[in-house]
Length: 288
Picture 1 (tube, helix red, strand yellow):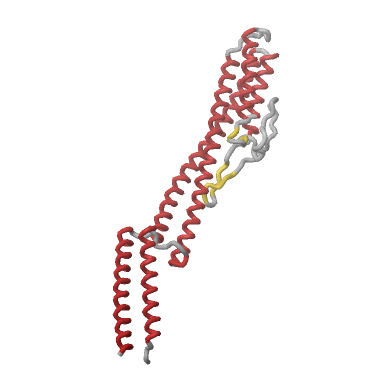
Picture 2: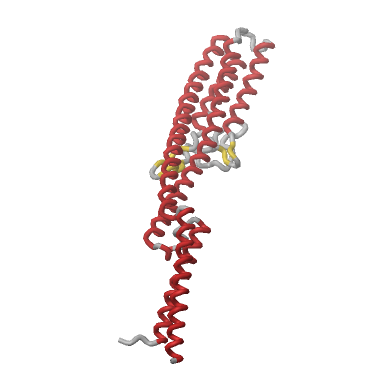
């Protein structure tokens, strides 16, 4: 089969375009450090990279969720520690009350102090993180405790995903966590107003029960924070391994990419030389 001069020129031109495209790809790899920049560069590996990056985004979201949950739980832990301190002060005041006279100045001073402690517990029950009340259950947009100690939140706890299939509770409901503490302080206030020294001492039992409940809830809070910490560490390792696999598919070695670009440049120059000689020979034959 005879190959025409026109067809030969088309073939040579096509070969040059291929070489130029190859050097463009090599130069892009050398400048960006990436072997795959678009889906067309390598559809199979590009699809894997897209899946890995989607998984990495999911992991990032889980880790952000963990940070948010830790902030709320840490705030809850501080509030509960303060409640325990308040109840301890109330127990100390009650234990020191020995006068049977409800009008005794020392007893009246204790009464005023306990009332103030009660207000402090209510304020702690209305603790917020940002605009959210953390002890209101699902009703986090309104203060869960009214000024008289009435609880207007609900008994639910909010859940947040910190990994695939793993969620953590963000809070404890204020009822009975705070309501029992308030009730214990209310009882102590009543006994300081009308009760005998023995009845005032007996009110300490309610405060002790409330303290134990706060400690149990605080222990749960600590366990949740440890779970978040452990899950976050596992996610960090998973994310690092995932990104390493992605980079291995996507990126190129800088030194290798430079050598490849230089090799393609040399090949293009040789191709130009060949084309030049072929065209020169074809022209000479034509002129003959």
